[in-house]
Image (tube, rainbow, N blue to C red; front, side, top):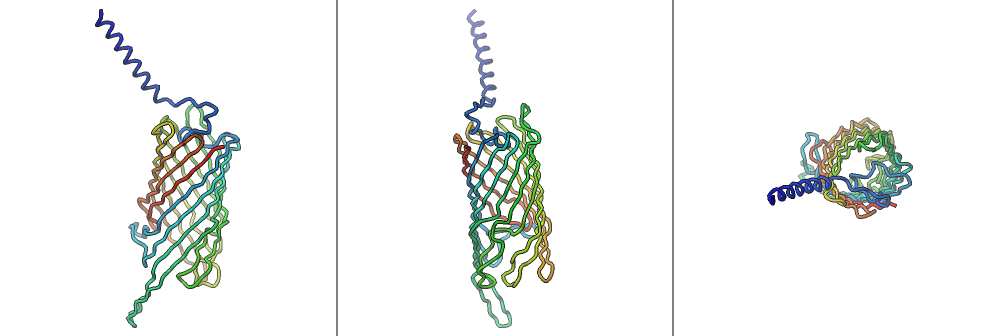
Length: 327
């Protein structure tokens, strides 16, 4: 009799433990007051109607190596070395539960330094001259519009169309030219750009999976590119295709880990000043781990973008941290 009671007790204990373990995997029920505290995994793709989010992102990268035309990772020639800081101020607003509009205002701080060599074998002279280029100021601003074609409901799947428009608000010409190696760099690209993106996401709590593809068209423009040219150069930057995928998971209720892969390809460009010069196409594949902390309405995100493969692109990692607050 005692053994039978113990068996029943153990059976009840096992069933209870299994139920508790399964229950622990379900998403916590969100109260209305907690909607602004959701993480990147369980919040909607677009902000809810009337929600406002502001933030700032600080990015830093060192310009030391690049992928050459043979897809090899090499150091820049002539002892060139530089640093690049970017400060992005953002404002995001939910016009409806499916429609969001974002504005990004970048501030740029860029500096390149190095030494150029002039070899004159006839005279037996090997001259070197310091080179310094820098820029600081407003960059090109972005307007981004999101619309959920398929909104997230019971199936936790969404399909979103994104429009991205860039205005050449930054300084486009090199300036304060001292010689061919010492001058101020532009803070903007000097041309309008329009792009669209299709983005899909699936939530299987505590995980989410996402992927997207984008296309950007660069309009024609003119700017002073070469410090030795007396006039501006007509140019057409190559159009871009971007593809990405990510796997994200909750480490707990307020920490999320994202793993993203990005592929970027830019087609051939053209520059025209006296003669037509082509700009080689380029591409790269980046891996980006991201750690996101959700502290009530504050969100702190840290990531590093690691170039893995590429051609005619920068090959140094990019570090970034952002802070956002939802009103």
